[in-house]
Length: 406
Image (cartoon, rainbow, N blue to C red; front, side):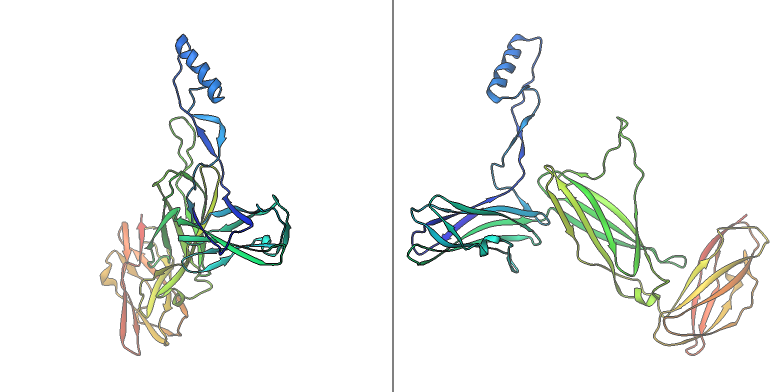
């Protein structure tokens, strides 16, 4: 952190700014001690007298150490500092006020500092101060601007500023990837999130949550916990620098509340919320912007299978319920034709050439098919032909489902 002062004459007051940070463990010199060696024991005793530590064999002592340098500040952390004004002159100063602003690459933020309206009177060798905290929300160069206003005994208005520069970097790197699992049986979307620790110190990911948009419900897919060689369960949340942790979420569209037209083109999936702590317990939180994905195109008409048995008996009829979605902007006059030649091991036992009627835009239509399996094994269901009678366009639907015939 560097500072520069701007003043036109000698000032009666001095401004001090100190960043508040957690202490660190005191890393002492570790010396192996042999209890049977007299010289080694004397070394241990001498080092204990000098350092105040009870044992010279442990690398971490019982004392905590104040930060010796300006530590890194990361995006999502809370930047806390103590600002104070000291009267170093031999006369009283009046109407003392301190204003603190934080200048980033895109904006200037006024910090919540009660000294701004203090209008305090400072006697010689007296001071006023306050702890100010602010959540860091941008990366890049930051400038803390502290301005001091006061009056002398003669009523002369005085003013000076100090600037403190510090960089802000990203603590974690987030990469996302979508897997479209939409088919005739479901409309699920899978989101893979890879989170990498880009800090210089280890961190613990306390919580990673996907807040879905109003069009989806979300569930996290977690692996089962496995015990290590010592019989204990290792936390997958601990990340060393440069380590990567993967998270997988399944998003199911709310098709009961919204038609499939809501999911065409670019749709918003939701936001990732990440909470972590670094080695000494410093908290941090980041939230991504709205995650978006490009949905695959379905055309004007889409067919989904609502219900089909997983296993069926040979030479016994079973039913399958299908649903047609009108994804176009115009009404569709539809008829259903069934082609048995594409599946010799499965026979349609219902009327072909059935008129399904008119399907309005953004609406759905259910219909039931009855089939007879003639061959054992895993069989595909194909041969559905839906025709738009107005444009004479036929939509072919093959391999829409599979059943196991026993």
